[in-house]
Amino acid sequence: MLNDWEKAIISEFPFQRLRRIRQLAWTDQVYPGAMHTRFEHSLGVMHTATLMYDAIKERSRQTLETELAYNSDGLGRDRQLVRLAALLHDVGHGPFSHAAEELLPNFNGGEGKYRHEQYSAAIVRSLFRDVIENHPSNANYGFKADDVASLLEGSSKAKQALFWRDLIDGQMDADRMDYLLRDSHHIGVQYGRFDLHRIIQTIEAIRIEDDGSLRIGISEGGAHAAEALVLARYFMFTQVYFHKTRVAYDVHLRGALKELLPGGVFPKPVPLGLSDYLRWEDWRVLGLLTDGKGGEHGQRLASRSHFRCIYHTPETSTLADMEELKRVKNNLGSLLAAEESASKSWYKTGTPDIRVFTESKGPLPLSKLSNVVANLKANNQVLVYVRPEYADDARKKTKRGNEKNE
Amino acid sequence: MSSLIERVGVLGYLVTSAPQRWIGRTALMKFCYFLQELRGAQLGYNFSLYSYGPFDSAVLSDLGDGEAFGVLKEDIVPYPSGFGYKISCVLEPEQLAEVGGDLLERCRADVDWIIEEFGSRSAADLELASTLVYADREALAAEEQISAAELARRVQEVKPRFNNAYILRQAESLKRKDLLLAVA
Image 1 (cartoon, rainbow over the protein chains, first blue to last red):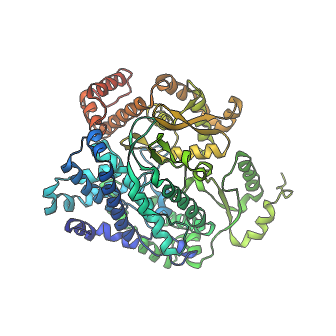
Image 2 (image 1 turned 135 degrees about the horizontal axis):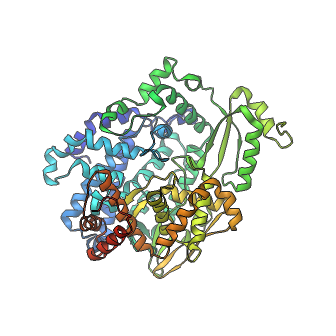
Image 3 (image 1 turned 180 degrees about the horizontal axis):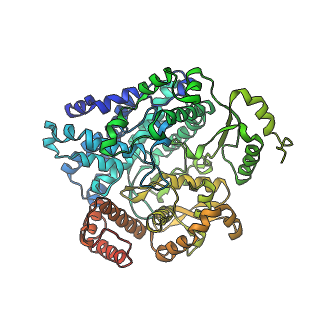
């Protein structure tokens, strides 16, 4: 159920903008049902985060009181804070979601890029300040927009509420749980399904063995549900998020956006840049593409003449596989149009870090209990693309014995 | 931009330089944070704060890739209060140098410094020290100048399980080594 405050927040322009940002970018080119948006996903994340919060509060109340100095009022307050943060976690997304993330500017002049979460925090501070701080419901809480932003971006200003950040952006978070189920539902596959209700029933706060910190984990009865979550991520990654054709459209979208954006990057998440940034959403990009803008990549998007994947390394690639990749790329020469790595994908599966509390042995990593998780290796596959008109020629060049002449 | 393979080489050197030639996940995460924040290593990570200190899932992703590449190995081993992770390096120094390439050459002295400074600390201490540095950098970015006591107070709000006097001692220790930039 939404309260009046949340409804007011949802009515604000930056939130309504999420209706015009597709959750899965151009995945509809592969799975035509992938037309859902960040709008309903954000509502789903708030709902799931609330279920998780309530379950942890019930199962780990004493721990929360002794370790984090919570009382009833504090828990009630932070419940609403988590709901607001979960609701607003994606307001900072660019057009077509993660496809555009590489075009966010560099962070502090270093190598790392800004992330959309940092944009979300900046937008909350600037454009949601009034509706958060001055809504009548806030008389019960006394929130500042900074409280919500600090939780989203991971700041010490979130104080003890920082514990709940894992519910929104963690190893077993509401964001992931919602999008796996939602994406599966909309595109019509079963890969992303897992038992959310069992995870909710078994979720709790656990003190881990390594540094003694308090984390969100599950009790032993939920271990197989958590295992299914890990597998859901794995299957959705290989079959949907890193599908070779879907990834090709990410390449074209990035290429087109580079042509469309001033300087080839989005504005920074500073107050003066935010209103420019928020003007970028799917409808605007589609309009520009329809007008023939976006260069070669724009044309390929409009005509579905995407780059073709003519070579890929194994899902789990060794250094020897990377050496072979170098040989292939060398052979391809100027035919090489794009190279995409699973390691750089926002959806990359990485190494799970879910803790399970057992009565007999205390906290354990999930991989200690699950053979499946223990043996699941990171996906670091690399996909190699050429223009479709050169695909046949390129495939021949990937074969051994067809080395480029020096 | 540092390449994945070179970064994995740096992680391998970090692990193999540790006193016991292996480390847990907390140490890996916090050492990477210190490498970037205290030594300016260009690893491309984007850390943000959790209740357990600065964290970037990209470090765990690189760990997974390191295992896939046959550079790192992760086992589950008993800890005093349960089971946890043990990360070790599989390669010999010459092989590691090849994998780590130019990035490792640039970072080698920084890694040595990190291990000397923090290598013997417990995971809990690393968590606390890294959180102090993170909060300090937040104050710096906000152009604040604060006392060690104020920094300790802010960190204790995130980590109430730590005794304030203990946090303050840690903050003062970091200050003495000129590792805190916003603390007067």
